[in-house]
Image (cartoon, protein in one colour):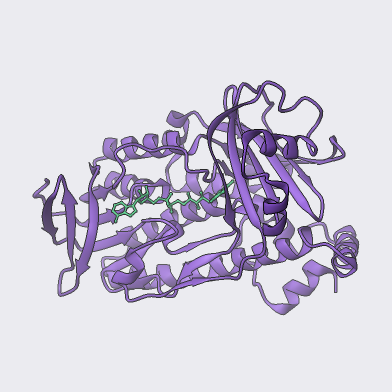
Length: 399
Ligand SMILES: Cc1cc2nc3c(=O)[nH]c(=O)nc-3n(C[C@H](O)[C@H](O)[C@H](O)COP(=O)(O)OP(=O)(O)OC[C@H]3O[C@@H](n4cnc5c(N)ncnc54)[C@H](O)[C@@H]3O)c2cc1C
């Protein structure tokens, strides 16, 4: 076990913890990243960052690590109906700095970022677990490795331990969750050769998304309400999943596909911490607040967290003030993203006359303002300058 003094101890070496660890270590801070898994595996997580997230990652200084991970750039988003491409978005025309989206294997990017964090000077401890913190003038954090317990006294402890974060308890915070609206499921397939676009086929009852993550492999997602997941059996077998998805895709897209990872459906609910910073403790990534996976904004959000928190910590010697300011900013941009997730769920995935009317009004509003006040280009340009109030909601829904 390390017996060093660290400025920052980060609990969790997922994308959020390892990115933050590397960025802070590169600036000369003593950083320990503690990760409980000895190796990463597919857990059906985000494998696509929209242009806004790509931009956040580059601005945080993660470009070299993304290159090392061999991320696939995706210049286009293609919309499908009846197996045909009916509309396309070319990201360079609307995104920040003309950037494309990026796709990647999540476990591979986790491994690469953790290795990169170490190359920037961070100490990485794995498998090891942060089991608790204590407060005082200088906070204490207890790390267990190989059954041995060590107490460390850093200046700052960061909880980057994911959606079911235990670190929230260290801040005396509650976990808050929106009601479930639908389920979102995913599966990794190999034996497919797809081009570099994200395909998205949506009907009010269901939606299917697909894209290449690495050569010869791709991710398929399905959005469906909980009753239909049960009725269709889509989550039970690989064949059922593929048969359902294939109905939405151009013919032959899944021909030759083999199952290359676990299959699972998740509640779409946003889940967040009632408090993000307290004294020497701060949360980032899904631990601070996770989004509805359907809109795929979780990795963009965590790259923003890494940029925002690292800039504040490096600019202000008073870290209590820096983390309070981070919490204020984080809450503001999280609420924009959470509102957008809710609006998309209402607009895209409900059936019946009222939902059809909502879509008609939204369509008419888009004719007048294709950005819908900025919310319709959130994936390309991010949440800055947007306020999720009633006026914005009415613009979005064309009311
Ligand atoms: C089905 C699905 C699809 C998604 N699709 C997309 C998408 O297309 N695009 C997108 O941007 N986002 C997507 N997301 C969201 C995205 O995956 C998450 O936002 C992102 O992975 C969060 O990363 P994180 O580092 O905050 O948390 P995690 O990835 O959960 O990492 C937390 C880490 O902390 C470790 N840990 C936990 N407790 C401790 C402890 N006490 N001590 C030490 N280590 C600990 C864990 O082992 C883990 O490695 C999707 C999510 C789901 C569920």
